[in-house]
Image (cartoon, rainbow, N blue to C red):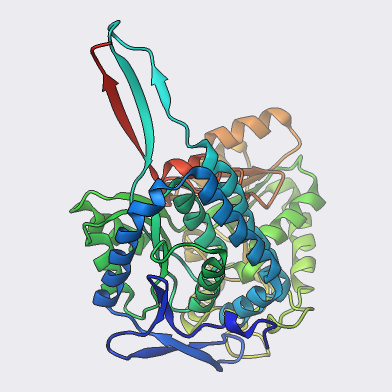
Length: 483
């Protein structure tokens, strides 16, 4: 199956060792395309995870003392190994997560790009010399690593969400404990295997596999030696993480749910808008936090846009991710399927029209037809809830003022998209939208060089870019007197 069979790991990685749970418990990892078991991995409990925290704490003292150049060298080795094993890593990801193999290969390259970016940024954790308030003093602002970092990552991007958190943490001198999703632990373990090959010291990078997400998460958020939590997941769980971190006043960054508006004005390049909608909506079968969730089209072009997007949607190929021809893979599990089915059914009952799709695919299982629903109104659940499936929901609007108001009328604020050829509107609307990221005339906005994150209940903090370094650094003031 794999060119390098050693990348399929069936134990957790703690303090440089491949370990089982003290209880001996394990859980199965299955392929969402056919339900078959791929392997089993240890079901670590809170006490097991605490040993990983202890290992990271012990390793922190030595790792933070290494030069930025040394840490960059380790990260670059990891980067090169990730790319050298791109095909195997992508296959593992597709088998456990379901996304089409071409997308999986793209994610591996994307994940590696964060490692390379932060390897370079490791040399740029600059402090400041501040002009003193009196003549005989000098004031320094030093940047120092925060300490042990707990990275809690989701199933929808099982490689990129790890490297986007772990690479900057390691670059500045922090050590990490990764808790991947129980749905996709194999990608995380394979990345740990390559980090081991790259030469990271024992305890610097640890991976805890568990079905007890609540118990292990509570341990990580309450453990006094964990000084930073970086979490990507649902808003509901993010609030619990934030509350749990309060007692020990940990640094917290959260990348949570979204409800992205995709706004198409009547002066837009219509074909570019349709292509942008396909790219934003149907990647990973719609299972991304920045997917176009509400497609808002100005009335004058609404029907033409809908016809064009319906045609594109109906031609998307559904199938197991391992098939090169597949563009839409399975949803991650039955709960995801039930949610998508409920949202479409309730929209149809409330008066929306299914233009294409709308039901479970003939392949069965958790495969769902690429779908488009028009006539969506603000009162429908499909307008206010994150769909997380291959379903476009189209609503119309009359004026710029109206669409800004409706786009902002949500507790979420992660990503938004605007298509227009009016240069003044291209500045005005993004500034008025209450979102952490806005794509103008593009449906793809994520890159290592730009900050990624949301506002309101979509989270706090930023990942990627130079701002992503700051999440793992403390600023220390040093005042020298008697000069």
